[in-house]
Image (cartoon, rainbow, N blue to C red; front, side):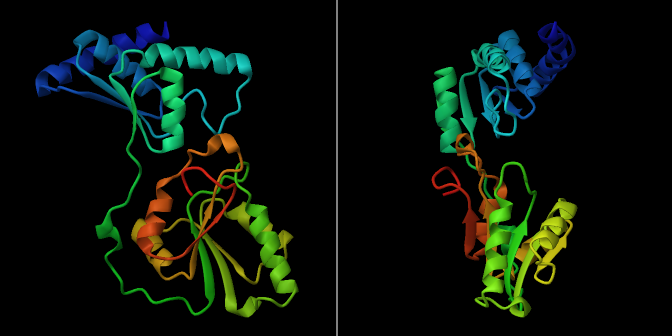
Length: 251
């Protein structure tokens, strides 16, 4: 029923566009999985080569822990849909390895990146304090945020760093969670929590920092996670403190 509805609503319009624009390759992006259903049907109807891209996995997605039966069902659906793809692309080597094993199909890596023009402005001055900066979303269930707060709290208590000369700042939408951690570890004096800023302002905050902060995922099955923030950090040309398990795409 699901496939029939997708074919009915999407294939007709897709075929119309393909014929009008003389399209010779179909490219679908996951997430969401719906795009691969559409790519599958358009490929079947037209015979045009289809490339299926995964920015994140489908049936073995790292943010969801499914029951075995549900995962097997979803894997079966994924295999059936991807069966007609010419080949698969994804963003990291660990994801490519898993996708190739699941589908037994050629899988290539096209990593995330950055636009160098976004980072051309070098007029930013370093902050007065020793500043560690994090820009982006916090995944509190999957990243070990507490460890950093514990270590900084101990260093201040042992007089190894000065609270007046140090700043740990976040630009993230998880402001309440981060403020609660600062209170819990008695770090309100050094932790500065801000909501997201416009993109260019976030870059400025990165480039003026002493160190940039990255949290890896605790789950060893999520070694393929490496979002675009890490590439922007590289272009900001600041040292990066990466907290989490060894190995994987980020390393």
